[in-house]
Length: 114
Length: 115
Image (cartoon, rainbow over all chains, first blue to last red; front, side, top):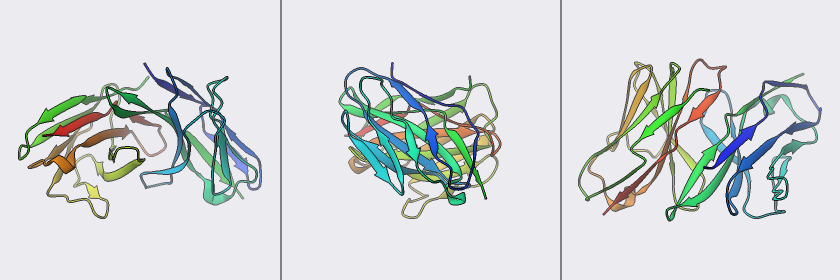
């Protein structure tokens, strides 16, 4: 079946540091890939997505590139802020029996300190 | 690792009936559970957050009388779609978390089709 593997957290960075959160997936065919963010006390919000190989999703300074050859979708940001502290989930979406099924990673907690 | 079981995985029923979806944490105590809905070709939408023993907190625009959520124990939350209609057809997914600093685990989702 499909699966998503994320690097374990928590990740603690100083403000303005460079962020990378690794995500790899297992799926047949060509799934769509997503990063969701969950701020403390809130539900998931879509951060960015990519629907085909070599696409780059970007939003709020975050980027991730769909790498089919390495089955990866690593999340990066050049300069993190305290407000980026949250849990980040990598996910894939693939057709299953004519419907689109979402599979999530277990999340990576990011803590940014001033 | 922690597992969240969601049941059923797929249900088809007639318009006007009520459908119950279960979300169980199999090897940990879920203090908080989240219910999401996914419309075709769209991202997930948070419907409600439930804490064990408390009433669920619904997001704006979600009818709480339509989507009844019960979280009566630390291992089980249920979502009941009452008097379901074709527009309720969707993919519903739950997630569960222990205390606030623990990871969140997702169920495999339920595909609901209303005829």
